Image (tube, rainbow, N blue to C red; front, side):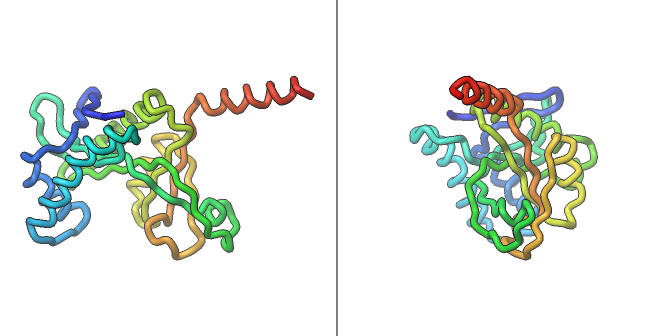
Length: 200
């Protein structure tokens, strides 16, 4: 299940490598506000690179961050990834008392400030969704963001995601959740329903 790279009209989504340290330092500072020692980014980069190999060896989904670069020039503009995400679906669907969580396949994206408002986040996310739905056969994919991150919510809507708003303060990382189902999931559900009806 190793994901080495994906390509779109304008972008190449590829694995990080050791040469990306300066990009990681700047990206983690500019996008996440992490003013951290160089060693922290080095450690994160090594862990990310190792995860490509180790998860593939275990036959696990390629949960990891990937570099987004421009086609042609190879200029680094951001990162996107596939992340394990746990969500309190009961609360998101209206039962504020139901805080039990379940695992989902999550989608992540982040674009460096100077490259925003050009549709790069959506373009990268579409490529990853295509991979998740057609290669990995994911039933559904989610994305999470904060209530005040309107740009991310708009990207979710462009992807066709349905948005859920968490009525609780916890967990803080899932204030707004986007959900999109694999188009084949509806066909599978209809098939199961037809089979069940034939048994009756």
